[in-house]
Length: 368
Image 1 (cartoon, rainbow, N blue to C red):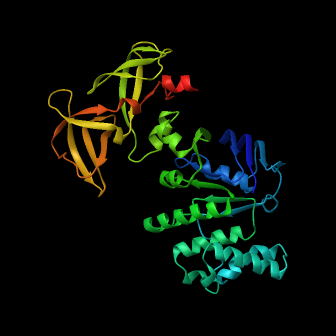
Image 2 (cartoon, rainbow, N blue to C red):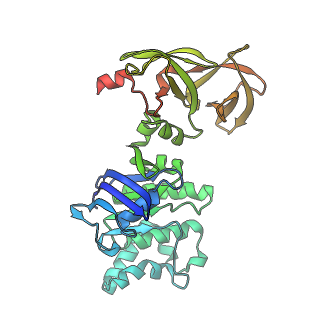
Image 3 (cartoon, rainbow, N blue to C red):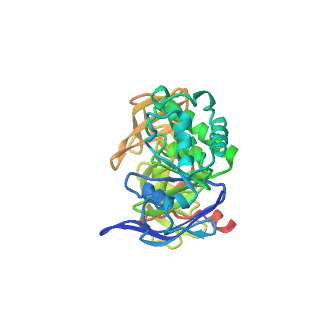
């Protein structure tokens, strides 16, 4: 096992600046997930760590060693790709042993490592089979086993579950989480799926346009997003955003006016903002309560989605291009065409300024 340290890491392709001054510390034994929209640089960052792309500027350390110029085979990393990349003419055993044989290890060492890895991944009964005889989940476990058999200091995963169906993704998420618990290895995992990020990670790194937007535990990113981008990206359904006008603000709290809701007294510190400035108010669907209402400051229910254990209620008028969403446990008493008032839970309301930065809650600032 080993830590990974990135200091002012940059990557350019010609005139395109892909990774921009990234600073990050991955602790020994941590499970860290890189997440973000397509094109944000998460796979490129993983490839820089693996040594599959050259670093344009900055420093990369694995443990105490600077590895900027080391080839992949000397970095002590194992990588699991999106495609299984298994040799179709080789058995499971031969696929897992291939890298070890290339390293000219003794036959007894190769056999010990392959068998030990097969036991961990429950592949012992499949060692004689070829890839075409395996299910998608079994093939992915073989790809993981091939990387693990080399006993790398760090395991890297590049969207390993994206080719699997929904039920198999859930199964493989559980297997990867259990694998990390058993091995205690340092793992870095790339995905565009926030559910994978939330369920697997000790620490999530949210990337946007080649920069780190926020780093924190899944709970921190969900409950205390630092920017409007993180607030909207983490969580499904996405956070509701509404325009808000600042009426007054002090270090202890502020008052805002939001169309369709009215005036709200909130605990955010808005002392540095001018009265009348436009803010953005965010509230997650489960923190938005509904009450029967009529009149101008009411919303119409335009869709009700029943998902078994919970219900999503969609409301008009739209805010921008999106409908507002309320989430509650099933069964629901709300139906199409009803008009309702919105009652946000003030302890879970977020405010974002014109630069999309979150305004800090006063009591949280005092505690810090």
